Figure 1 (cartoon, rainbow, N blue to C red):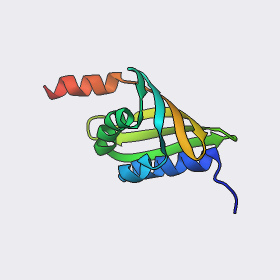
Figure 2: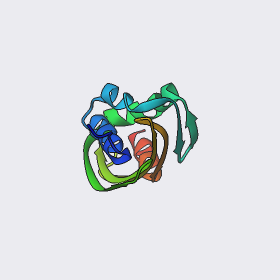
Figure 3: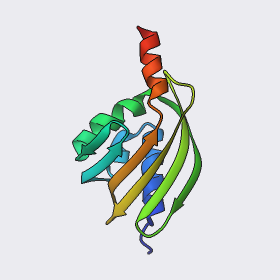
Figure 4: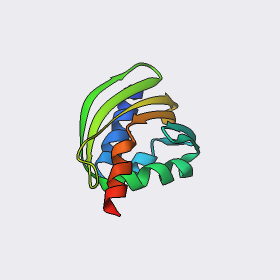
Length: 121
């Protein structure tokens, strides 16, 4: 039996959280994950959960645009439709070690979410 590739792990994680099964998604996250997000670094699985789980609850739909990987990294680009924002494209560069995500660098535009919060007031 072959070991899953970094891309396999990244896609399984992505399918889980975009499929509204955040507990399954967390099975792919290392305890010591470092997430490099636009607001700054987030360390540890619980910090990562606090950052990502609320967003996953706002998610209505996600479209995977592209995915690439090698032995230890994967790159995903996708678009999301959320409750407050109709289109929120993002990219993630994931580092995988021993079948777990040890680093996730996420790039997305925070401005549409800031505007949606301001409009809701």
